[in-house]
Length: 266
Image 1 (tube, rainbow, N blue to C red):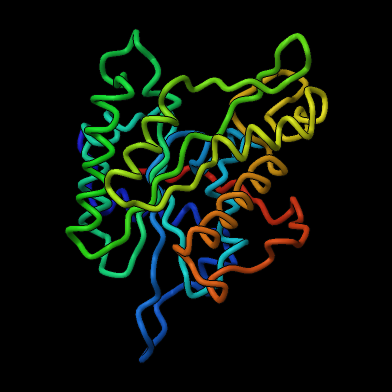
Image 2 (cartoon, rainbow, N blue to C red):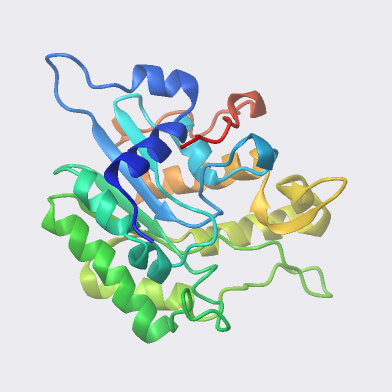
């Protein structure tokens, strides 16, 4: 499967909140706004009306960034670091990215699926090999790569402690970030600590638990906002972004700011 630049651009525009899309356009006569591209899976991806209230954290990230820093969310449900590349999605993003932009990469949820050779990667070999494609591709175009360890699932042991679910993948990404000198956002460690503070019952209010579904992987609006806040704080802490680039880090974000557009039609 290949992805055209037009399809990628359409998906990115759909990921922007309506008010943000209207104000985030290029400023006539001014400096070109920088863009933060997200490459990832369903935990970050744009969701549409038929999936509500499921919410990707990438949908909430613009609320924590200044209006002259745009978010182009290309994360897609079900993708791994490998399948995102094989489908031509990374090539399409790299065709659009420009010097001064950022490429934020979060994968592992689907890399872990050993039964699916189209998605599976091994943490210390093929996972790192694929992540290097994102890092090298961004750098070759004058953009800054940023690696984010996978956000944690809602999983607790019998003692009520939040337990990790991603095996060796976070450690493999941390090691690669050190080796390549890439900024690392440790979403896995931070989200695990957050779920621990909230507890088994408290975390249900952050995941896509409804009357018909008990989803311990994907978020609802409060969960997406909470994770996006972690990501924004990490972007500041790691000096990927400056203080002037972020906003509302300690403010409440209304759930009503989240919207689910209708799916784009061909």
